[in-house]
Length: 288
Image (cartoon, rainbow, N blue to C red; front, side, top):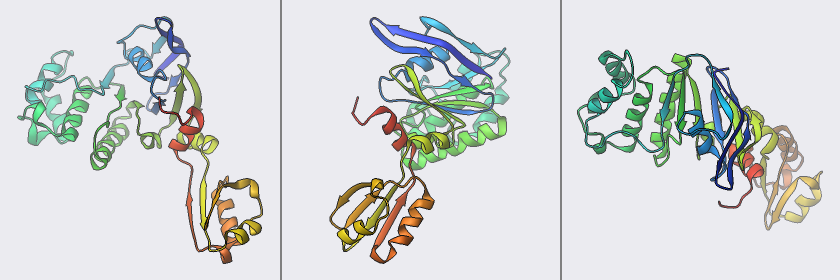
């Protein structure tokens, strides 16, 4: 254990943002904290990193654990160069040598734009600099607060390739909050919070298996015959002209259905349940 909370509570006036929250983060793990807008994620993270004090309960760290934070909104100066930004931040810690900045610049691919102003960089370049700033003190635990918001798919993937590499090489503990739920697919532990409470927890695969339903779409020229041929009508989610949509519990069951009805099927599509499916099943479909 590198971090845990015990009965964490945070209120704003009459609003209870975090309500008796208990989570445990293991050393070297990748943990994702997910939840809809207003669920209490941001308030939780602010208490974990010391920017906010709980009204009740406590945050417990392993002895001498160091933290780094990649904030959703950058804390660096647009008018300063990348090197100037990192040098100023490095002086805020004890025993961070200029060599550390050079090492991070090379590892994170910053070398070619170290002399550019931070404000002139692309979104992906800025994110890499933000990560470098968070790693200056060689943290034991790295918090990522919506780290890829606003980035295109290619840049998001590049950032995650970098983060995965860093975690594997340095055995660093990573805590993520994100709106891109697929980013939590490889998490060792997922906490889904809503109304300030943990409503589901487990591995990413475990969460999906328990709460996300698979989808099997069957296209046919004869919908009535296909419906008559299906063995278990309780699996049917929706029927429309030329298509039947089912929710088989497993891929093996989907294959059994396809084999049993193959003469009546013109085309099929199977999709395993995703983290998005599990999230909606747990928190609802309404926009908040």
